[in-house]
Length: 102
Image (cartoon, rainbow, N blue to C red; front, side, top):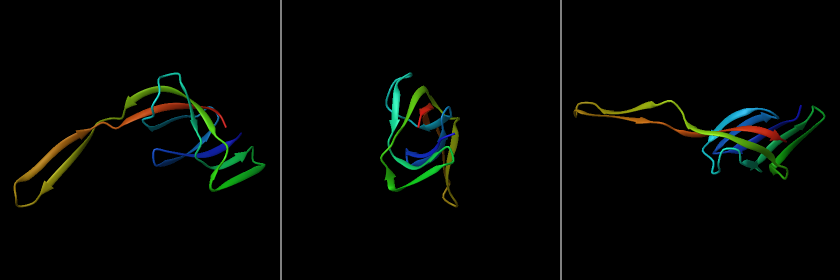
């Protein structure tokens, strides 16, 4: 089992072949292939671990499964003693991808 740590959307994900992960929204259509080339660590079946200084030259390929939005969250702004309060909702967009190859 090969493992890798990829970086996308300002976050880091530990992935292996066949994983489905939700990342920040990516450009592309459903079914398109995506390449993540910002690898930080790879592990080849527990035998050879490579750590980037800061990045590695290999890449991870994935397939876009869907684009969607997370559940709604409420953002509340409040200031005491001034009768100010404001409520806003937010849906963060994401892309679900399936890791094809490391």
